[in-house]
Length: 93
Image 1: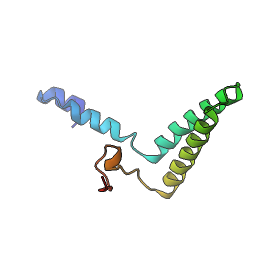
Image 2 (image 1 turned 90 degrees about the horizontal axis):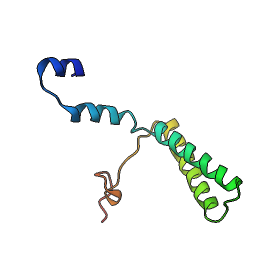
Image 3 (image 1 turned 30 degrees about the horizontal axis):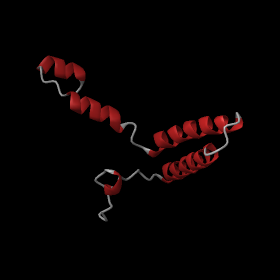
Image 4 (image 1 turned 30 degrees about the vertical axis):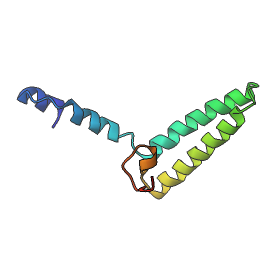
């Protein structure tokens, strides 16, 4: 149901609209892009002279970018885990 149909019917379901909007960002390509931006920012900070723990952070963000990029290229979708607050495949708690 589009927003125009909801206005005509008087039945507003903002949850459905928000849920449809958020599902567009729940893929590996979006996550890989976000980690790439974060990794670039951290490498810029490392290059500017902040070298203590930011090198480790930059490496981890780069690794996360590579992992999500490989997953996206293989067509794998992100899964959630019960350990991290999701409802996914993990039942070990």
